[in-house]
Length: 144
Image 1: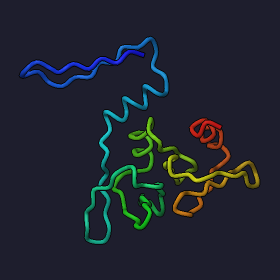
Image 2: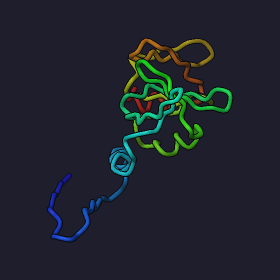
Image 3: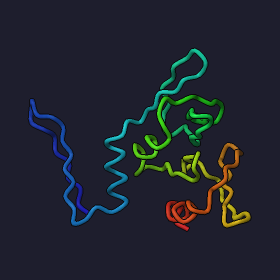
């Protein structure tokens, strides 16, 4: 792969051109990272906080509300789970059940449990259940 970096002429806008035979997962992830905002607005009591995606362990839908979990806090997110899933589709976030999207980079390990499901232990010692319909995609994302 050849990478060329050029400075734009004065008055020109910055531009990124991707020239490839086919878009593979790696390129899609790179493009998504360039397009996506690295911040998400979270609400904690009376505070409005800008959260970095890197600090989020997982999102969970509970009683028609969506929450993001970091190492120390839980924030309400004013988006639907499917919107988060679409927005961060080519990032480290992956839906693992009907109500949970996990940051794959925050998984310490996974282990099979009963009925074809997996348990994922996160680096903050929390455990989340991976529904059997999402196990294949998780294995692919983890490279196992």
